[in-house]
Image (cartoon, rainbow, N blue to C red; front, side, top):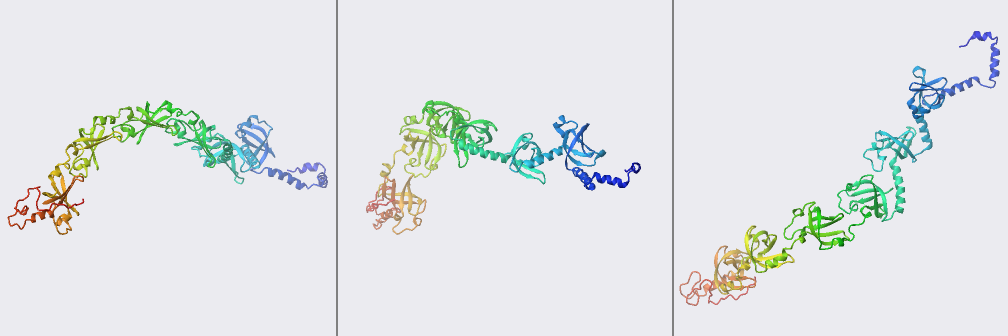
Length: 594
């Protein structure tokens, strides 16, 4: 407000006053100077601007800061953090102007936002994409973690580690090093990757390691992962595989029995594949092998005691000591029992006596036997049952080729179909026997090496083909028999129980016979002439037409003839008795091949 009375009392005219101002601001545009002065302050006081402030006092939980033009603002003490402990009145601080008009005429200021703005400017000015930064994981957010590197930046969950961790929250509070993937200045957003940095560092370490690592080296690594087949060990830039078979000389079922994640282990380098960048490691190889001098501790033929540790369909594994196991094959468990599965003989953890049968040190294998701890009963069979011994046994099993007869517990003999009857052709043993039948046999042969006993039933009686059949059935005889089977090549005729002869189709009639059933029928009794008795092949050849020739030879003699045989025998009408020889001259000299 202008005081005109005061100006008038000075006695200075308006013209003099203007002259004094012109002299004071000679060469200066007064209007422009004021605009510049006011404009500078006005620009500095725009909301969102970083400005300098001065602490002029403390009011409760706030710090009073004056920023010029008699403008003051309150900033909560918590925004100063640890800096509050040393903050003094008159000290200059950087603040961010949030708004010009607030409650009570105070302007809005923020120390925290000012610090972030300064940090952001510093990050943008001093770093670029691909640079390495360090920060602390603050908290989980959607899709990853928020990391403080001076300003909050985003670490995607997929970029936390080489293998995505099960719970990324475990990284909260940890200081980590990462690589800047992207800087978005417009959105003030930075994305970082810990994984990419680790991969780069591992690649560099891998190249250095592969250049210096040699097979046979003993190195220290960290267990990073466990699988059913083994463990992956970080050697400091590259992972090596420690297979489960190279973890211990003894038996383990899973790597977790020996190792745990992040455990430090000392391993031996077994193999290096530079092309595939793969390394095979061994843990048991860092210790002496129990297979050294194994022949001295377990000589072949020695009897030892062990524990069954595993049972398979083909046998049982027996532990003799830590790291030394042998296999008892199923065939080496019993001399006499038919073992279908090893569990019929042994159980896990059972203590058993075994005999060392064979050692293969290169393959680290030992063959063991359980039956060898007992007397082999087959060594006594040949003494107890020499050929010719008559035994009685039960039919245990039937096969196409014969019957198995139990001689004593665990010892069976084979009664072959060819040794069941002298005269009957047996095609399957079930024609004569069934399981459980008791049968009397004679021992024919004992093969101790193959553990076989041959038995026979027909050998209990004399071979009728040696004397009885040749005596009873001589070539030229006319005999009566029953048709049992008709084939396309002839007819089988039963002469007596279990004895048959063959009536060939060519011997059925004088004319050519296409179908034997046109001449004879199954079950029909006929008179036939014996043509041939083959004792070596055990066959009898018969003829129907020749028997009929003999009946008709005396047909013109004039005497009364028998219905069956006629009256032509010897000219006197005498008929031959059954099985007798005829004197009609048809003696059956033909040779028929069967």
